[in-house]
Image 1: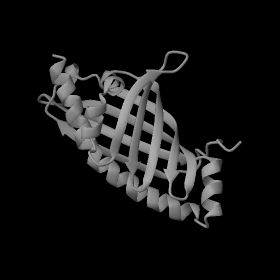
Image 2: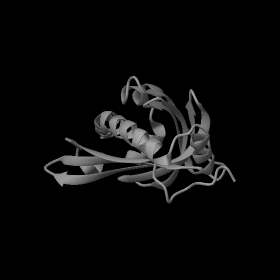
Image 3: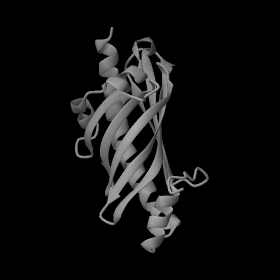
Image 4: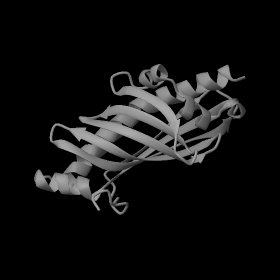
Length: 181
């Protein structure tokens, strides 16, 4: 089973928060995520976010489709909603990863939440966690790369990407909240 996910191993994990001047009662991050336009997605990481769209699974769960570059990795993600609440959204994707060395898959878990911090302000938190599949581990082994080496590379790229996109995602959510009065 090459798509066996190794949740006991973490390729990278990053959490970044951003404070917004928006009242919590106006926020609906799940609606924002699953109606995010392609242009707005691209504005949230201009040189890294390529395209986005949304659909549903056969059983009706929402899906956010994102194509982005993180470090030197092209990721094609199909984030299926597990938790889709107004102030908390958790999605996961068995994502295609394309590099000059080949193609593989990793599990990416994306969790976003919003908390009221008072005085009309809210704190947005964006957490991304990546786990390898057996196929991914086999592919790096064939290249002579250790798990520790690839995890360090991915962690650095993921943390940088998250630090760039989180404030822009937060401001996008704030704009959507203000528009929804």
